[in-house]
Length: 284
Image (spheres, rainbow, N blue to C red):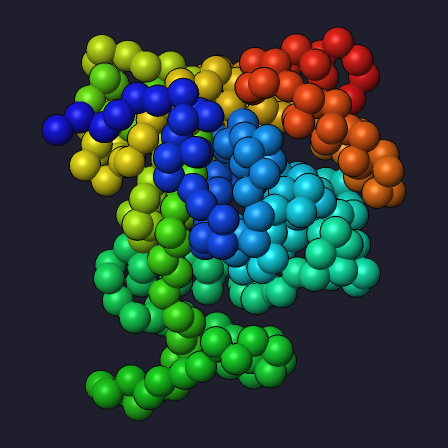
């Protein structure tokens, strides 16, 4: 059976509910901004967000009041500075309190692999001798039955829904991802449901041998959303908008400016195409 090809609005309305655990992955590029904005438009709330490197898309979701918890490794505006809406939520509980679970990149990757492998926890040679276990009770350890070595463990990550952006899908719902993939495959396979937005739908993926293809039977819905990773980039389609990332520091610095921007460019637009028209008509 083929994967349904839906509009992004339909995919989010069908598969994402308030209170769920949600992962939006994509490392450096292919960050699913369009999906994040649709979550804001539909007013999703009380989400437990997961991401290896929460950046602008999670700053926007947190500032819009969609999140109650965040599991992450390193959060910031790449190359610029802090995420002001994330900091405001943690330090001042605005617009609502935010529970944090912090990991290293390696631990997040191990936890996704464990979830994708249907294992209860992941292991890594890290954390021992650091102070993070004192702040994250989920970090524990086991003793190797073969060598006696003490190895750090982290609980498996199994999102209710993972959302990815990719370059292409075919009409059966098979998804082809090119470029830096980070933990996209593992996050998708660990989830109960997987939504993928893509730049285009094609008759034949023409995927070369050993490339990353997510098979249609693990994909719950595909939505064709050109530019869906903007302002991050999609290899082979468009470049990263570095000016947007720089401008975001001022936009998000205070609550009023952030709220006005979200109301105008996200809540005030009907879809991602409308968002792109909106921000390109003014300086971001």
